[in-house]
Image (cartoon, rainbow, N blue to C red; front, side, top):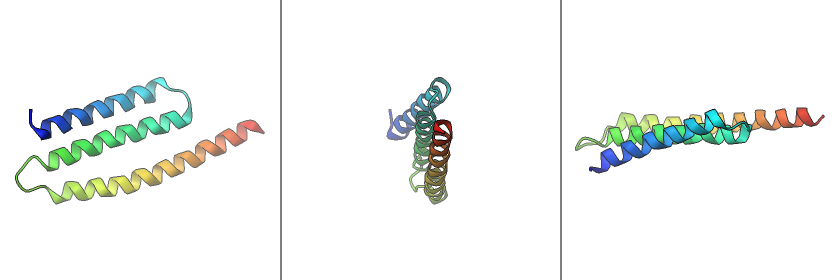
Length: 91
């Protein structure tokens, strides 16, 4: 088993674990964490695919870095919406 195949399989397993959590869990914070786990799996697959040749693909690495920034922003927004929803339920 090569390193690329190992990281591909690990990325798919992370994505599947996140999907399971997204479908099974009801609390919003846990669902947000599940979506982040899915994103981590996608990023791992993208980096593994970029490293499969002798010279790594810089475009895939740039996409992963951009995706990380977008994922952090979306997580912060989702957490703020979740907090607002909890505060609204308390009133």
